[in-house]
Image (cartoon, rainbow, N blue to C red; front, side, top):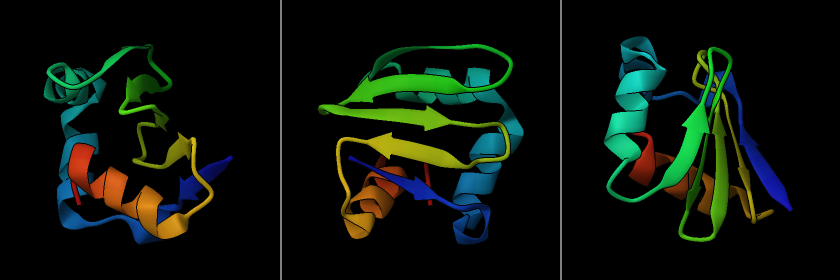
Length: 80
């Protein structure tokens, strides 16, 4: 099960996170997540969900098919 945020659904705060780079996002998530990143994506486990966040701020959140839940998780942990 997974839900994906599309680029058209980005919010101002989310764009700021992506613009700051994956290192900044990794530091932001460090208190609540374990994961890894490379030049193409950041992957993290948070509250039983797997987040994959791309440099253009698209995200795939595995563990739910509920779009509203995925949007809420994205807003809570990534920004938006």
